[in-house]
Image: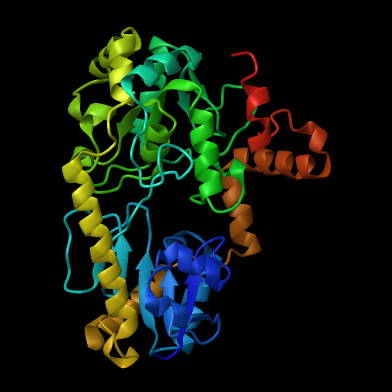
Length: 388
């Protein structure tokens, strides 16, 4: 099989080994023929970052312009519908979606150090009963993005009216330490970062596991790390989440018509140790759901194999011609461009709070002692929870 030159546009994916892991093709034969090429790749794997950050957008435009015969693949775990006018293939969270041989669903994996590696909850009811005595804290909220769907903040405030919810991250922080799920180091969804998040959550009875968007099929690591930490997730985001994960193991906010109903359910579980123990000892997926997930994994592998084993010239799928060309020109115009000095100044004038924030961050870089909320590292977790 001939050499396959690939390049990926995603933070932290800067070499071949990381790209293969990110694509989840480590065990597939064709991946042995991959080589990393950031100038003349045969396959350009773009992520959601091309829509949000100028460097990725302009790099994508440069690669496509210089390599018009390259295959374009869009890969994201975010709530974004794929654009098949631009991309030949797409991998996104969309549920119950199909488009010829051009689409596969994004796969999520459980945290390997919690439960068993294949995502089976190994906690028994009796073990859960014993575990509850170590859960000294009520509920956590671990987020940095303050621009998510407003439901997330409303849920935080609603649950906080019942009992104090500890916001550990930069957003709505109410503890004396800033904690990010990246505290484990490296890529946001790396095993270190996932384990860090699960370890933090393991000190709580409940976890607010709320996505940044309401989107069918979009269930991120937020639910999985909450499962792995043996907390009861309070989940919102994917309206059909119960088709993939055991509804007996979490509170599905989509099942309730008001925050009052959700709080009533939380209180019921919080005041009944047997009920809490029952929920955290439930399998995270039913047998039927596990079989469906395995079929989805196989389908993903077949999808990737099809892309990378057919001749390059036959792998093209995105349309070419008059109207597709007009569409593509509009697409390129809409991508983020490097910001000019004048645009930066106007942005600060419109949002004066950004000026204060940036001055504070610059000062902290020069004088770290000014940071009154230092970030917690994995090795500091026990110190943070030492009073429990």
